[in-house]
Amino acid sequence: MNNYAKAYIIYFNFAAVKQGFVISIILLAVLIGFSFSKTPQKVTKEKLGEMLFFDPILSEDSSVSCASCHKPQFAFADTAAFSTGVHGKLATRNTPSAMNVASREALFWDGRATTLEQQALGPIENPNEMNLPLAEAIKRLNRSKKYRHLFFSIFKSVPNEKYLAEAISAYERTLETGSTPNDRWLNDEPNGMNEQQVRGRDIFRVKAKCFECHFTPDFTNDKFRSIGLFNGRQLNDSGRYHITKDPADIGKMKVPGLRNVAVTAPYMHNGQFKTLREVIDYYDNPHAILPDGMYRDSILSEPLHLTEQEKQDLEAFLHALTDDRFTKR
Image (cartoon, rainbow, N blue to C red; front, side, top):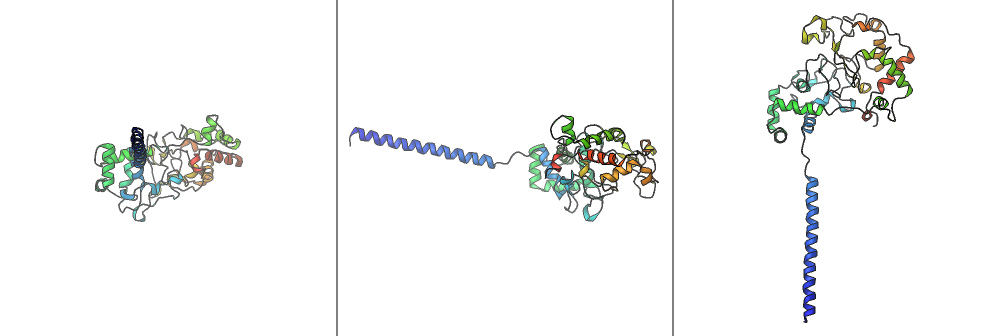
């Protein structure tokens, strides 16, 4: 074999080795990329809160979760006047929406919680809802390898009450909505309100007096009002008075926000009105519908005298407060 042939063989072998090396590198990169793509994303505090919100582990018999009453498809409210808790027990008040609560100054109908962290733990111990002592809830979470790992990776701590409240409230703070026809109309964007909804907005702000209580971006002033649903009979809910013991608060309930109100029926703390039209009819002339109402706010001292068209326009505006996620299904 001459020198030229030897040189060619050496070159060929080197090229083959080089090509094999390159292929190996490519395959390694593909495998590494595949491995990275399969690596779970780091669980955030908000994601942990979401897991807990939907997990029945926090109820006495592991039958209900926060989401059992705060149903996502109904703006995290319920379609029943009173939600069903463990052992078929009924809640004592209508389930309010858990959306758009990040800026609220008081939570629950009677305002007994002043932070989302306080609110997040309340239903767990409530005997008619989840009926689980917090101490037992924490024991359960600590017995769970999954939750021990997640709490430690996020909080550098095993599960405890403080971080349980932090996680759930962090998730609730993500449940904000702002893609409604009303929002687009205010921002001069396409697909805003139609003419009827704009007329309804004017009625809402002036003749119907809704704006007296329902303002700010979430349509609530975070105050407490009595609209005449309290009648003084046995077991009738006296609302804010339960917390303050101030006679001036008898019958007062927290003014709810109105974002997504069209999908959160039934209405009021006792769920007695099944439709928005029933609510509008009541506010138009509350004395005619509930003549025995006590401690009714002075703003409702006289009928509104809304016409049929004005009632329809007002209802159309309330529908314009619905986020796109609930209308584009």
